[in-house]
Length: 485
Image 1 (cartoon, rainbow, N blue to C red):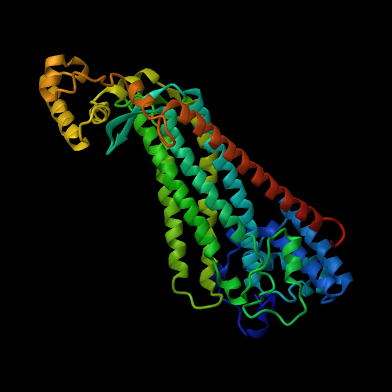
Image 2 (cartoon, rainbow, N blue to C red):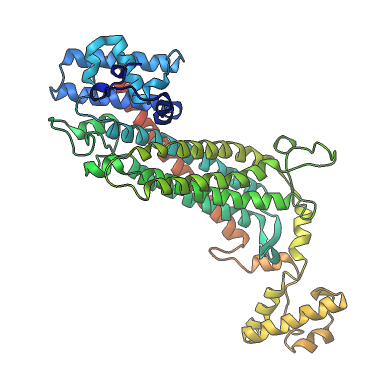
């Protein structure tokens, strides 16, 4: 292969080694940026024409050629060649085949450094909206289950030991609040991602009368990045995206762990629908929670991508370095992983069966009302630490005698504290639930209100996602029209 086959090959006297071509090429994975690469190029050539940097006739030919290439890619007629190195050179090579030497004007006032940063941001912008929509649907599924089982009581746990009775709806709502924070982080990130680096050139800017704000507006971006060196070398947006996904996966993994536990014979709280479970190749009786286990296991995969990219960028001098070619594969895989899980979770949650009777029995077992008995003593004037010690002795006595609090007679109660026989002690899990009717508590009225507020927040988030998508789609339709915008 001659060096002239490389679009950057003018300075070189020897072709690159075939193994170097394999190592250097990012096309096998960055071809998924093709759509955004072409849209970015359409905005760029529109600006070049308006600023008189390239002739209008050439700009129109370039724009038409780019639209043709996009159709070829969408119809899977486009030939990707490893020798093209990356999606940018692949598109430019095909453009030259279509329109001839005028294709060479497209790269005026642009470097692959600011071009790839733009493509990555445009792709990530769309991906943030897709994942945000998946989070909304998952949170809605949790709310659906909570509302359908608003009167189910279960044991709350600390240290995986039965602690105090709570509503199942309150427990599920805890995950909704986690997902709400994940949504907030994505929305904040969207604003930082949605800024244009184009016009930064290789690192120092470009010596042409460009209009960077016009390019940003044509792409429905919220402005430009202010420093050209930072614009081409920054990957904070990718790191932050992976960090948000890692936190999201930590939340989903915690949920998955509880679902695995709850579906076991030892708990018996839930049963997964057959469509979301698998069997054993050797034990016919088994019904395995493999979907939840995979969700739990894939969290490590996403965590690893965050650490991997941190390791790539930690020692890079300014500005662009080839190391940054390693910025995409982990992000792509993390996004694909999370997106799939967010599609699987909602139907799995909505179809699982709840054993309310088993949950109710567990809610009152193992002295889960002990704290409420101590609180009853406190309301009768006993200092809490004294009340705590009294109830602790009651628990020890019951364990030794094989009794529960309900089995204790008046004489036994007075033996522990004279106030115990004179006050109304909590007898059921519902006594504990009703006593916690305050913001943040597990009382039925508050939980019902909290579920309504969360649903309203999800509706607002969904509306925001729709608005952003419509804005982007409208801008892209203009770029893909037959005339230069």
